[in-house]
Image 1: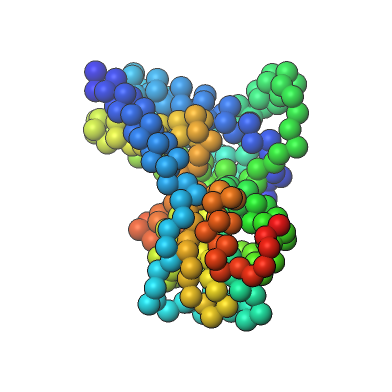
Image 2 (image 1 turned 60 degrees about the horizontal axis):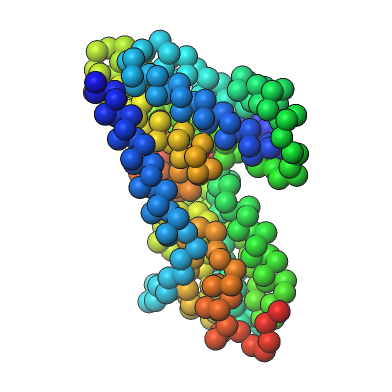
Length: 141
Length: 145
C-alpha cells in the first residue's frame, strides 16, 4: 500500500516541478548589484561592446545548447550585443560567486561589468530583446 | 569516460518511459531483484556506454523507422550524467529493499521515478540543470570526469 502512495506522490511531485519550471523558465530578473564579478567573467568583457551576454553552462546541460543557438543568433543580428559562453563544470566557485545554481543562466553585463539582468533557463527571444533595448544603441534587427 | 556520439533525443525519452514503468512496478511490488536489475542498467549506461541500453536498441529497430526522421541531436554527456544520478538512487533503493529498510527503498525508488518521469513526460533532466547545486552539496556525486 505504501508503494501506491509513493507512486501517486512521485507523480504529484513531477507535476509541481513541471509547473514551477515552466513558470520560471526564461523569466528575466534584475541583476545583482554590489557584488564583485569573478575574474574569469570579467575577462570576457569587451570595453567596446555595450552589452555582453555571458551564458553560464556545464557539460551536462542539454538546454545550454538551445540557449547557445538562440543567443548566438540574437547577438549576430543585434548591434552592440555579444554572446559568450562560460563552462563552469570544473569551476563551480565561479558559479557560486555569481549566485548561479542552475544552468543555463545568462547574465547581461554592460562594458564596465555591471549586471543589467539575468535569465534562468532558455531565454524568450522577444522578451529578452525588449529588456535589453534601453542599453543598446541604434535600431535592432 | 569514453565519448558516445550524439543521439536522437527521442530515444532517451522512449527509454525514460520504460524506466518509469519499471520503477513504478518496483514501488508496487517492492521487488529488490527488479530494482537491482535496473541499477545494473543505469550503471552500464553511465559508466561504460549508452550503447548498452537495450531500450535504445528497441527504439532504433522498432520505433525510429516508423516516425519521421529528425536532424536534432542531443549530446551524450548530459544523458550519461542523468543515468549516473539514476544509478545512485536505484542503488540506495536496492540496498533498502534487500535489507528490510523498506522506507529507504520506497524513498530512493520514488526519487528515481520522479527523475525518470520528468525526463519522459517533460524532456527535462533535473540533475543536469541542477548540476551546480548537486556539486556544491554532494561533491562526490558530481565529481568532474
